[in-house]
Length: 92
Image (cartoon, rainbow, N blue to C red; front, top):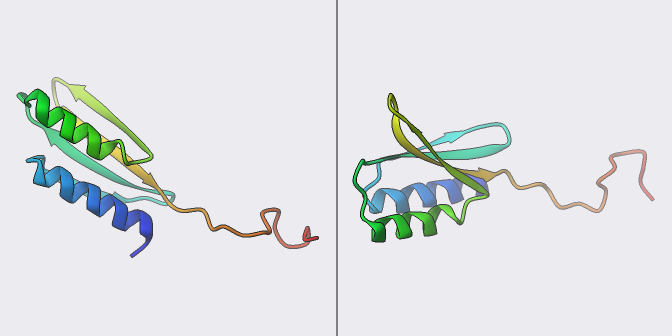
């Protein structure tokens, strides 16, 4: 399992432990986590939820009258660390 997927799974599990139904989805360059946020969420729970998603590379909240509130977070795929970032043929 790639590190970004493992990180996303960990974040999703922690959100679930806080009572938010979460799901993980793999994309080409990142792994996303989405969680439905109930209408009523105590302030202390919001603090805990924000502590979790702050560990992601990006996060936000989508709110609409049709879909309710969806908290999302994204974990980027790791970029391989190499000495040759210019590609073959441009090595020193």
